[in-house]
Length: 98
Image 1 (cartoon, helix red, strand yellow):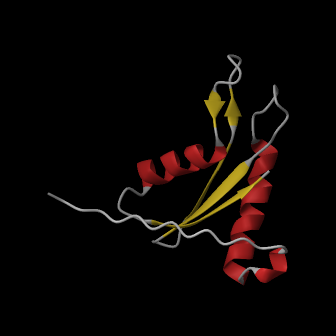
Image 2 (cartoon, rainbow, N blue to C red):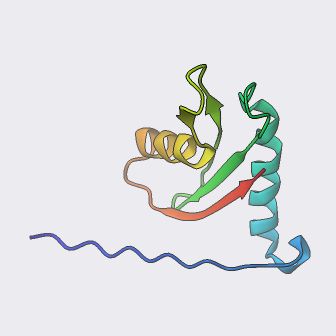
């Protein structure tokens, strides 16, 4: 039997200046990708940027469907892309912006 450990650490900050420079850059990438979200029904644009263990940053945004509220959240889009293109690279950090 194979055992996998998953650790989730959530840090809360009051101001972006409290983040490391790398995390600030990741959050800026998440903010930029919100512009390309497809959210004609809710008007709620969300972006996600993921830093992978190989140093790559992958991004995704929410994609709504005419069968609202069916759709894909930004985190899911980014995670699917990351796993499809970099299956052997672990997720280090996720930044989400709305």
